[in-house]
Length: 246
Image (tube, rainbow, N blue to C red; front, side, top):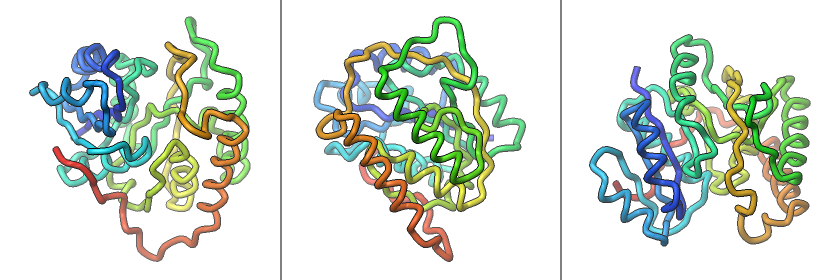
């Protein structure tokens, strides 16, 4: 069983050294996807010889970083990809829990949930983010008959062979709005794993129009509705199509 931890990163010089150190305590196969950082993050990552690095010469978006990570892992024979963020909002200590769940061999997607189980020390999320998450999660559950509690957590484990069935091309923060409909249409098996709710910096923003909560929710809805209306392809083209260099 080959497992890769994939970490999208964009201008995270403040957090990257600590994240690398902590993640390496729990897993040794780690890929960073630098999404056009300009703050010295990519130079820091380039100096490391204990991680893999995939570079975007310009910012392509969070979703594109995930898609390229799945492709990179598939091309190199990995069985699973565990994705996590680089801002210390996902605890590396949970990686063994994801691996234990992987070893049950019952699921295709193991999705972290910050709301499945209340944990001591949980932070209070910004009100607009929690509200949008609740609305979107309820909508996803209504459409697919699921009982998800957190549709936006980026701390996930993905079976690589299952990801080949998807045709993902949503490059931005609306990536989950394309991901979940395709997961459902492909008949993938989904479960959740409780993770701690951490917001180190409540002032962090999405950028541009997405900083407006109303516009962000509308954008998410538009992507979701467009994906729901897309015909199911007769043969999945797969999520591969890496863009960038090692």
